Image (tube, protein in one colour):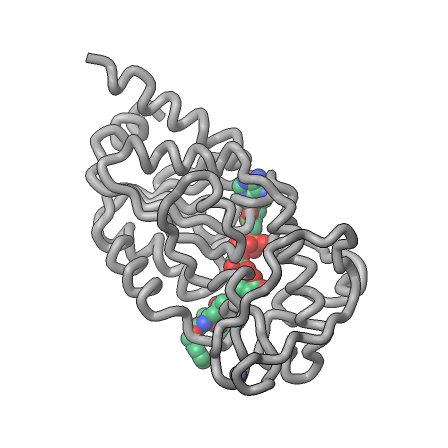
Length: 254
Ligand code: BV8
Ligand code: ZN
């Protein structure tokens, strides 16, 4: 641990990649948690596909609206804030997230590479025109309800969530920037992700091959355990604030 603290203090470029576990302490269920309501009989990956939307747009749109409302109601947690603080203390920090909420931004991270898109930027499924959704939170969250997707203003086509589904390409610029950052960093954090979904799951291995120290923060084991130099078992909202405090407390002192 003292060795990791020294590595952090000396790091030229830190990369932090987060997954659903980083938002768990904000009350947002992780991707592989059991779903509730209408969706209890589905696994999330079966709803997050172009085929599912084509087959049953109301089921899929209702699920994403439920998740968007949950994200709007949620607040950033101590883990999000610790990452923002680390960004302020470190020489350079690149934040990569698989999450489709905006809790990193709301915790003060100016820029995050959103590999899997965003709940907050839907677009037309036919012509890709962006579609503005009301930012206000309704009194009645659309929990457990099917909802018809809105019609595109430009062509009338069904609007789809602005996320990346299984079988779809990741946004090219964000993925290229994430790969370049992984290949260039001294320390790579994998926080709150089961490290199962590619190509994001490849990034810690890219970093390791390039000589970076790989640190995993997760309460449980994952497929990344064997490749990580440090497995910090615990919740992001507990482990990260402690790490930032211990690495940088007094580091600014003369
Ligand atoms: C693509 C957005 C090219 C939507 C998501 C076989 C081998 C290799 C690859 C593949 C393969 N078969 C198919 C593929 C490709 C596929 C893939 O990887 N499949 C896997 C499952 C095998 N990938 C793709 O399709 C990607 N695109 O490859 O493009 C291409 C194109 C065309 C044809 C061929 C190739 C696109 C993938 C994007 C999928 N979209 N999300 C939405 O959110 O609805 S993925 C989904 O998983 C999540 O949203 C998240 O983004 C991602 C990862 O999940 P995690 O974040 O890790 O969440 P999870 O619940 O799993 O884990 C939570 C973790 O947190 C746990 O470990 C838990 O212990 C921990 N935790 C809990 N509490 C805490 C905590 N940790 C810290 N603190 C806590 N408090
Ligand atoms: Zn359209």
